[in-house]
Length: 383
Image (cartoon, rainbow, N blue to C red; front, side, top):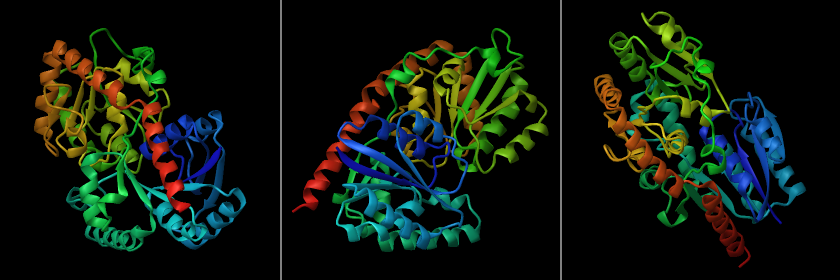
């Protein structure tokens, strides 16, 4: 079998990391090896190992460490002789762009977000904006070194082509996917294992994402602060961790009903948790193709998401979910109350989302599509 190297910053809990895991598990024509560039908590390490996917850890501790990364990746390529390399995350892509081309093998990049959109710039300090511009300059300067980019959504192709000066013909869409065999038969977790104080009739809102500002946590906490006064048995379940995790834990302690916010941390039993909850919240500011929304679709939980392109690409307001206004606490409150008061509608929307999810996001079909991209690039490189 042909060998493929996946190069990624870490195998911590995260959407990009989980997507690499799902693809690597379902390859039929390639033998995968995953290169983990940076030293970090690697929460998905056991999942990769259980799937029999070899991991190579570079263990770089510097913030960038590009020189060290390039040297180590070149050494590994000489040893393993892969047929193709697929890099994900900004820093891993930069390292790969300088290490791979000299070997004459195809190099694939990942478009996983609207990284340089105005929404991101609006959420960071002036100093961070300067850094982001420097990253974009380096990204654009080296973008031509990639032979192909796999985008997880249609809606982020045009912005990234513009920001990074990438020719449209270098782009191909292969959506994020999930293993239907894992999600469809999953049994709901006992609600008392989520909330030990659970009583029949309690309402469990759930968020599953990195706990960072741009995922809409200001809006979620602001909305919950008001909704929890109106609904005494309403709870918010926060799954995941991230840069702002401690900040929001501290904020919960200072809220009148913050004791009803349950922090579960990162979990690998998301299908079971989602199926035990009542409403999925995702009022994010910007995304690529949010895998957590796909997971909610497959678990038949009613979805409330923000009106951003990557959510609107799959969720239609009133048809298979509910759309709220990005950045609006009032809108999130209004839409949530509407679902609370109309549970039968929620079930209908969730069923419609489930139908789309099973048709569009089967990881086996999507991986087969991705393999065709790899094989065509390898064949082209021989000519």
